[in-house]
Length: 274
Length: 342
Image (cartoon, rainbow over the protein chains, first blue to last red):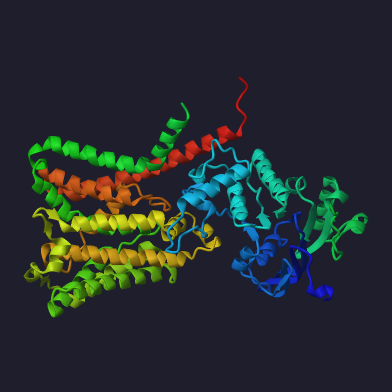
């Protein structure tokens, strides 16, 4: 088998192209997510971050290129296949029904039922309680029957992450999870991301605020105008470097010369074996 | 303290609207009883209440589904008449058998399906779409019946007739049994079945429901079809109770049924509501009508009182929603911020 026929990553895209009419949203994007890795996908508004993950999870059909998930190649993918392969997305638009209890929100659209379609309420409540405990929600004030609208923003993100976990996600994609959150709420979301990593899961964390993603990411992929222009290990960069690079990219469209050595784009990723 | 009072407050919080509706019903009953003890100690009063209220409550039960979906159906009074005409015509031709009932229910199903298509596929706001079908089905009934009523009293002794609207033991109206059975079935599907769960999601956050893979169009069409069938059933009961089809049947129930739903605490904003509330909301309205008449208020006042009741119920809904949102925001804030040093 040649290298073209394999993918050693959890998720990989090769020359992914997506057009919306005349606008090219993704230009030959090669994006990689390894096993048990947190990738910070950063870039300005309109760089194509959301389009990329929506293409990977099947919301959009690509116009060219390949998507590889767990070594399987797809020309296009449906949301169902993506979920079946353990790729879950937490959308930027909150997928929370405010007047419903937490347990109903966790199982939204994928309720546990018997063969006649009747709900297994007790099972769902117990599973929810277990998730709440495991994820370190303050369990004295948060219980499965609590209405979602009484939760703060960080916990609402937590409910969506819990949903992904319950359905055995290996990769949880968080699309701008910290947008419109207060400082303490952002920290709560970061704790959830660290917890994902501890459980051996992978995570793609999309944001345009590098201060939110820097503490939790292992690697950064920087998008600009539909391209991934740079990828770095966190160990090679300080947060000032990252900020410097982003500013330069926004201004000139290229990365500063002194960082080209450590740019990982079109190089294989060598994970530190531990 | 702690555990027990916590559990109690949790149960109270979850069922407070149902409790409020039920208490309102009992309070009104006590009030009217005090005003006219004579009328309210006679069994006849209750027979009369239970024989007429099903026509308001039955369509209100399925209308609860529609309103939980954050939609509305104004066309059901005409659908009731349409189903009624189908039943009367079938019975006149083929005798008082199940065929007529099935055809009438199918007529309601078709009307509901049409509403569903208009709302989901033609993307007309349900308020407008069903206003259109309200006139359309009334027009169909008028054209088909040429404005004439159809007598059905010769079938009074048929078994089916008695099963649907007879008097059990000579005083208990069979239609009340049907109403209770229907309420239980609709309650089970709303609260214990996947379909009901999706109904709540469709009304609560439609975009989220779609992103989570729920086909909200299918749910909406289903809900409108259920409402069509149930309205048709109400039309059948209303026709048989007076043993006559008449072309303006159903017109009286439009506001009453909507009132039953909102008085029962179902949110007009969608996403929350209960069958229990609608059931007792409907009974409360019937009690108001009966009580006012028994207390000697002229019948002309009834509509005015309904108008006031609906408006007040809606005002209370908006008020509760606003205060709850404020209180929850305050609670969330107080939990997030470190408490001040003592």
